[in-house]
Length: 470
Image 1 (cartoon, rainbow, N blue to C red):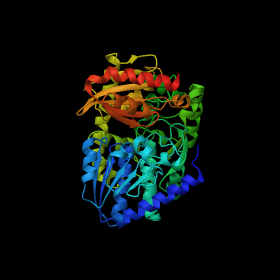
Image 2 (image 1 turned 90 degrees about the vertical axis):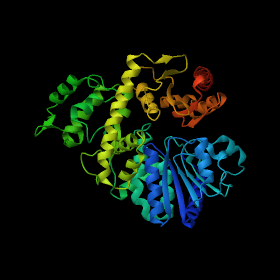
Image 3 (image 1 turned 135 degrees about the vertical axis):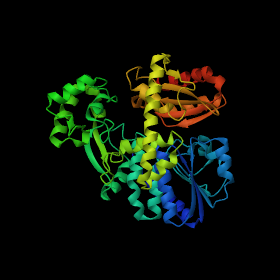
Image 4 (image 1 turned 30 degrees about the horizontal axis):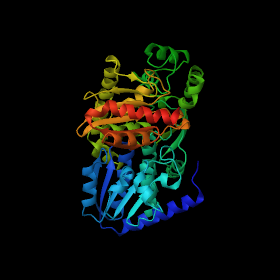
């Protein structure tokens, strides 16, 4: 449901107020998340502060913890700017000079304490949920950060493409197979600048970098009968259409194909797909024409994966360098991406080979222990959910060991939201009842809980989910 004109007016006022606070600062501490959205947001904030002549430092965090809250509250900089984090912990921040550009569900304790949401003059909280918008689909953390940057100086619209990458990295284009809401407005800025080209295409991963046969073979969301995980079937498919898989001795990639070749392949693939999957298989894709070919930066999905693989492997600074235009960082990013692929593949095999997936009436779950990094367990959970190894009509809960307890990631099919599911409230409530903390989005959320509370946590989660969707 689109935001009302009144809410949009209030958002513009809040953006203007935050922009004034930022311009008045001589120093700023930027705190941002480690995923593609957070790294994109951090880069936008970093370059915005730089262009304003503000002394700044950038810090990446996996999540907001008590230590991070204490650090933020005690910083000596004129301003702390938190990107893609912070909204779930508003009641715990007590410093006045604070800007939060986030899209996660805000802290309900803080919301209840506010008679007027923007009346807390010392905190500039910019979040789509407070303006009647959906932070899961309509705008991401990088998008809110970009809107503030553009408010500071309209010429900062040259960073719109980074907000597009952030949105795609957060799967905000998945529900409609296109960017919607404020994301659409930001996309129009990027297109107008010549930084993004919108294409109607297959929505598989790897248009720029995967060899053509692998591009088809590893199409898993949605799965295409006869192609997905069928190497020989992919070769026979290309041969049947008269499409050469190789040119000059090397495999072609999808974006090497002519328009005629693509159209013929797309038509056949959509015929092969389950009718219910066709919208997910085909829709908008976002090409970044100014990026070098073969690097993965020319496609928004692949760009986002490069950022994710850097942040998830403790090298978010490399992602930041790439966003700032440092192409020398790509070598480091390639190493991160290779490690990311190896770990994801190993994790999926570990879960399948050890039969870790368990099912209750309203939820399914697996405990990866120390075999899967806490920073990627959410990605793995999402892949398991779409792999055909489990049912799609109930949420999946994944556990992984972390330094401060057990990391929990929850994922669900978007169709469950229409039935009332809200994983953000599920994770937050269940975690707090066992002495932990959590939050996130309706279809993707997380928590951290004590190691000995897993079964109790699952019992509570199942009770809440059953009450939401039954």
